[in-house]
Image (cartoon, rainbow, N blue to C red; front, side, top):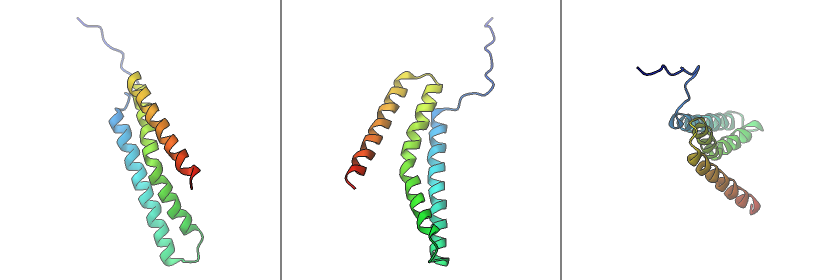
Length: 106
């Protein structure tokens, strides 16, 4: 007879679920900001908040891959998968390096 395993208070979420939620949240958030900015531009052309909303939508859409990789790091560390944590950290550092390179030449 096998001993009973302790049941965790909250089971860890699979990495795929975490990353898909990050992508969905980023895309829907950016769509919401884009729509709010467009509606504000159409109905209130002199308002200063509309361009800010449009810019925030672009920034959120660009940052979505960063969030996805961060959630992958969190998910893999919860699963105690060191290999994929290291690989995900390397991907995140590469993303940061590319961002820094682009920002230097703007």
